[in-house]
Image 1: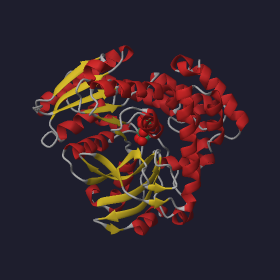
Image 2 (image 1 turned 180 degrees about the vertical axis):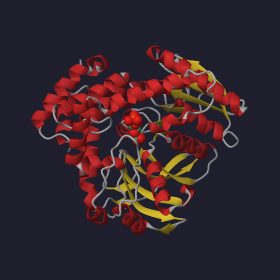
Image 3 (image 1 turned 135 degrees about the horizontal axis):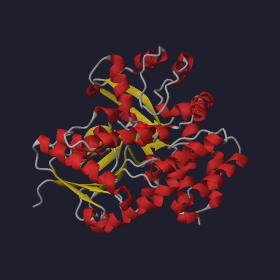
Length: 437
Ligand code: G6P
């Protein structure tokens, strides 16, 4: 019988990896990871070696028998894996810079997962993730694929509709950040907070909020209205909320709702940063360089606190908590991205949604959330239509579907602008988009 768990992390050379390693170390007693394989590609080899050596030092310091393996051979790594996590960035940060800069240069929001930027990140990533899914179906057909690669909603949608493997879960740190923000406002431990999450990735609402199982939604909404909520993720600017709007909304919005409910203000703010010469991707590039300088220090054997400046901070808590609950059949409730299966009425069963789920050894079971309130339904349905068209365009290399997707996106002002952005981004990213050749 096999002893311990084999985890494979694709995109293992990411600056985020020490978070994941820390998460597995913390839970080793319950979740005995025997092998952690960090996989990357040739152009990521230097980063993989640096972060891999740090991971080895972290494990040594913890004194646990977890083996860290570094490889560029994905297929070798995948053989008999139990869990595969994906955190890759096709085209690296230079592609994200284009996703952000090109729309902004036309006065349109340039963002990693929303609007035109999110669409092109999906175009670059979907063929690669479907390739990984294919390899998994041959080499580890019983493994769970846990994807954090952005845009996580569209990637999960693509895997669920077009992948071979049905054991697929999308994951994000945003719902966890929302729970943490509520816990901070109520000055209680995060473990006492639960929420009914309903929506899509980066488009999720906290419909009801509970403290020790008692409903506290109204109290939390009043605190948000009073401006007591801190920023939830580092990469989305906190411009505050109008108290009247928050009261009328009656549900907790996620940080990414700002791009839709505060469209003009967010654009103005992004354009200001852009005119100063730096988009978020460029800030992240600097942060990453600094992090890798730290990681090279052979005396470093912990996750450096500087990593918390990244928007994805604490994603490993979401990942390790999820893997732990599957492995130990916990039956607890966690928000993840899964096949809807009727959880949200009015959205296709086959579509990916972000909802609270019961997590057992058989994976996540979405909890029935009923219909989306009318006030949120229109926006969520529009974004879901956008996501579905993007996935189809990514797979078929369809210019028409890409154009329609971008035109119906609320962040794009007109079909004329959609065409301008589409044409410019297709050329800028042509090396990573063979399907559109
Ligand atoms: C948030 C999102 C993640 C995203 C990250 C970007 O946390 O939930 O999906 O990857 O921000 O952060 P960055 O530091 O790269 O701008």
